[in-house]
Amino acid sequence: MKNENLIAVAALVVLAGCALPPNSASVYSSSQAQGEQTVRMGVVDSVRPVTIDKNTGGGAGTLAGGALGAVAAGSTIGSGNGSLAAGVVGAVLGGIVGNQVESNLSKRPGLEITVRLSNGELRAITQDADEQFNVGDRVRLLSSRGVTRVTH
Image (cartoon, rainbow, N blue to C red):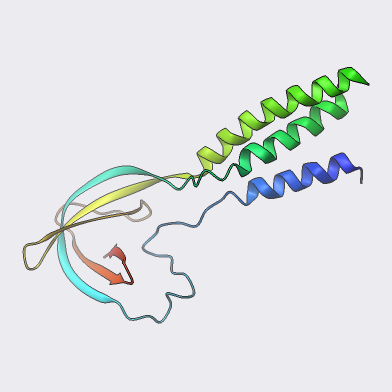
């Protein structure tokens, strides 16, 4: 395998690493398993669609896209200085595309769920939109270590 191919594979691996874990009420990390949670009952007062942006600004997408663009353009276009110029343009364009890909991968649809607890207090929790909630639904708020989830 040529060095260019190795760099391209490495860039794709870095881009794949941009995928981030969900903020779902149905997903628990291993450190959360078997942990006790406080349970409060309530009724859904309102549901609002939101976007959850997990972009940490790490720049992995920009770097990977730039590397991939430089290799792809530099090794396929021209020779000598032309190849170098194509590599530079490819790196810039690849970096722009990689940044956009990273940005898109870091955004997920979410819900802001406002719950009226049995004692009359209102609580709003934002989580991934992987479960449907309707106004009037009886729900549970599960809380532990600063994390609260809404479940049916």
